Amino acid sequence: MILIAMGVSGAGKTRIGELLAERLNCSFTDGDAFHSAANKEKMHNGIPLTDEDRWPWLRTIRAAIEEKQKAHETAVFTCSSLKRSYRDILRAGDKDVCFVYLKGTREVLHERLQSRTGHFFDPSLLQSQLETLEEPGDDEAITESIDLTPEQIVEEVLAKMKAR
Image 1: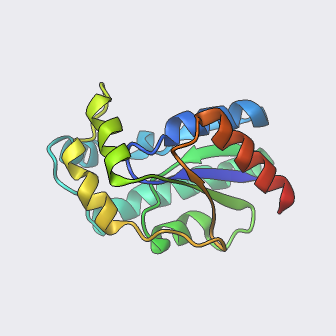
Image 2 (image 1 turned 180 degrees about the horizontal axis):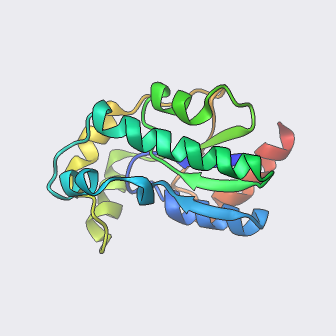
């Protein structure tokens, strides 16, 4: 099983991904690690990524997912996965890939980004991400509100996974 914590920047993907991996006793991989230096530079400078910027990044994450699957490992990844077409690349028709959509209001996300330090993402890009976001339906993801504590989110995700 592969879980992908998804959502716009500031949703808590890394924290939730780390906690899920800990609870599932599996590896955790932050999708940001797969961004090219050019992509990171663009985001640092407040320039939104285009689809052309994202395709190689998404294919690299998919290759990492396939490596985990070949080794028969459960793993947790993070990736904004803003559009259905991006999720389609990551999922590649694979029923073993489950998205966890971390949903929050613009206000909460903005507040989180303003207080975050040491990250390459320019908070001014939040609006661009929200405009790009195609929220997944129940057929595509487990949706959790970021108003809950990280521990509550993880408990709910694990309960919903068992129910599936």
